[in-house]
Amino acid sequence: MDSLFRNSGQSIGVEQKKVGHKKQIIRIIYFKGPVSSAELTRNLPLSTPKINSLLQELISDGLIRELGPGDSSGGRRPAIYGLVEEGFYVVGITINVYRTVISVFNATNKEISGPHSVAVPMQRDFDMFSRINEKLKEILTSLTIPAHKIIAVGMEMPGLVNREHGVNKTYFPGVMDLNSRISEIFGYPVFFDNDARIRAFAEQQFGLARDRQNVLMVHADWGIGLGLIVNGQLYFGKSGFSGEFGHIPMLENGELCHCGKRGCLEAIASVAAIARNARRGIEAGHASLLLNLVGGDLQKIDTNLVIQAARSGDQFSISLLTEAGQWLGKGITFLLQVFNPELIIIGGKLAEAGQFLQAPLYQALFTYSNPDISNDTELVFSAMGVRAGTIGAAAFAIDKLAS
Ligand SMILES: [Zn+2]
Image 1 (cartoon, helix red, strand yellow):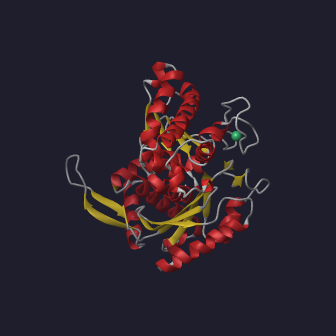
Image 2: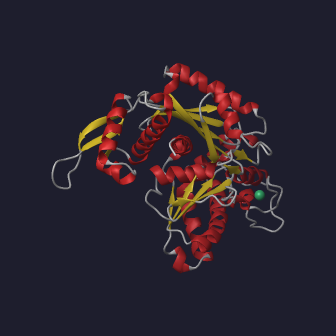
Image 3: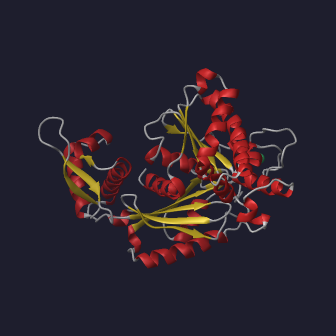
C-alpha cells in the first residue's frame, strides 16, 4: 500500500508516521463509507488542520476525492470525502475443501472481476498456493491493472488458524510463517483467517451483524464453523482456534467425522452429510427427484441438487434438509444457552436452503432452550450469497494492512 502514496521527501520516521495516518483514513472510509473531516477527527487522534492536510495529500495521491457537501447539523455544510474507485484494488480468495474462488475488488468494494472458480481445493500441499497464484496472474493480466495498485490479498481457508502467528495447524502443522511464505509466492501482502471468522467479519462490516453487539455467525457449509462477535468484537480465543462448533458431540457412536471422532454435529448436519444421507436414502429405496437430476448416477448428488429438488417439492429432499435443520438447531441451543446472543446468522451453503431450515431450526431452539433466551434471539439467513467469503477476505486484508 505504501507505494500508493507520494513521498514528500521528509525524514523516514516522519514519512512512516504520515503513511500510517493515511492508511488509517483510507481504512475508515473503506469501512464506513464517505465521511467529513470532522468525522475523521472524532475517529483519529489528530487535529483538524492535520487531517485536512492529509486529505489534500490523499487527493493528490489519487486515492480520495471530494464528493461535495454533506448534511449539516447547523451552519455550513461540510465537505464529504470518498475513496476513488480505481485508486487501489484488493483481491479476495475463498479456499474450501472443494475449490478456490477468486474475486478482485476496487477501492469501493465493488467486484470488478469474478467470482472465478479454480479447481484447487484446500490440501496439505504447499504447491496449491502457486496454482492459485497462476490463476490470479491470468485474471490480473486480463484486467490490465498496474501491479502497484493491487495492495493486498485476503484469504479465507478452513482449519485451525491463528492469524496473528500466520499458522494453519490443521493443514500445515509446524509451519509458523505461512503468511510470509504465501506472500512470497503471490508477490503481494497476503493475510488469511479461518473461513467462519472471515464470514463473521463480513457480516459485521457489510451485512446483518452491522452495529450488533452479540452475534453467532454459523458457517454451515462443507463443515460447520462459528464466528463469534462478543460485545461488538470478534472473539478469537487464546490460540485463535475458537469456533470449532462442528465438532461438538451430538450422538454416541454416530457417524465417523473427518476429525476422527464419532457423532460430531458436522458429521450429521453439514453439506457433506446431507449429500451422503441423500445417496444412502435413495440406495435404501426412497423415491426422489434427485435420481432423475443425476441421471441415475448417485455419486453426482450434492447438496446444491438436494436444495434444487426441495424447491421443486421433492419430499425426500425436504425431509433431509429438515433433519439437518433439527440437528443444527439442537447444536445451536448449546451456544444460545451459553452466549445469550441477540442475533444468530446462518451462512454458507445452507443459507440458500433457508426456506426449509427456518422452521426446524426454530422448533429445535424452542424445544431445547430456555424460552427467556430463545424468545429474545433473532435467527436470520445471510443475504451476502457466494461473495461473502471473497468480500470478507478482501476487507480483512485492508483491515490488517492499515492496522
Ligand atoms: Zn468432528
